[in-house]
Image 1: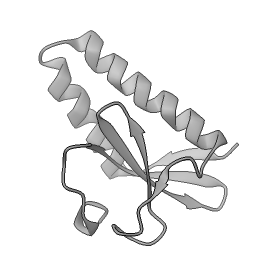
Image 2: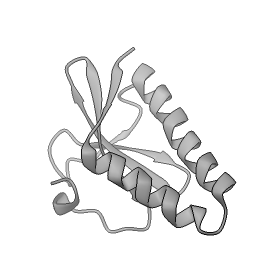
Image 3: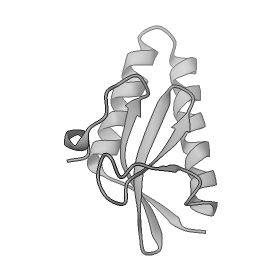
Length: 97
């Protein structure tokens, strides 16, 4: 099983997601983040389960969790979580930087 490493930007994304949802419902905000992190545990065991997104940048993959996409890459013995974005957002190479 690979370890999960989050970038600072991914942590900021999670805070933004939680804060946005929590305005209306704190319990729902907690559930969304719990669901995302549960998918990451699956990813640690099955790192190639996400779809390749070479259209964004070489080596980038994405994993769907509800309405959100986790952008990640494999780095040796870890899964590096790069961003966590709403699925309706237009994703380009700029969001990975």
